[in-house]
Length: 335
Image 1 (cartoon, helix red, strand yellow):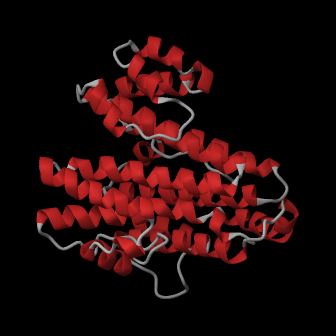
Image 2 (cartoon, rainbow, N blue to C red):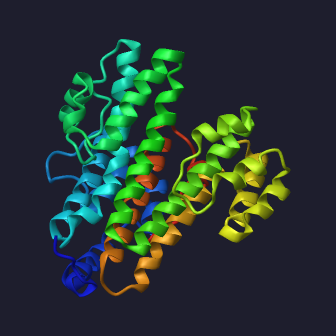
């Protein structure tokens, strides 16, 4: 396969930069927040070229609009990029979401129709067929192995929680594997940080649940910068003591602030927001790179963050939450 150089990305990088002016800004977020109705908030998204010029949807169906936009963003990048394979790994979480949904529905004896998302690398109907028939031959190796491990573990324990534990590990193992093949340091750093933040959130959740370090080891995902031993050796330490272990990975302040805000508000969303902001900050480093794979990765990360912000706002509007309550959950913006 031909190896492309950064210079081969000059045109597509310039085009993607021109698309950044359509990203959600803080000013647009405020307009969405101050809109009197959920439909007012949706109008801001339509102004940003969300949708396909067909009839506008009801606010309660906003997930359809957001899924369409994410799919459109990936389709744009992958249609223009000299090497679309660079961006396929970012579609894997949607694939694994669907596999998890299919298996949980199967174990519960219910239909998964209407619960699958169409933003992965495999069409939902096709993935449903492969999963139900256990057609491992036509699946990616890591996914097939993960599904079989789930089936074996569920048969032994009957615990549906193992579905997420096993398949989350399989998903990120596959993402890291693909990123290592592509030999792009920016992408590898970004994915490693993404895994680090997941592991930090898992640590806090398992300790809040009063679970053992052995349980944490089951949910720990490999591939981040922070090795498992840092978490397990410091599992029973105080917040401040464990935070010192994170200094070498530049995660000490994030951890301390996240735990502090959790204690202050009683909500886990504070830590999630801080982690998402750190990830967006890492993606924003792509703005300092004139051309190459990096601006495209940064744009996709920005779109994912933007869509998450839109989801928080619209869900809050539909729940009749006041703007200030919704605002405290909004992440930073890329633009």
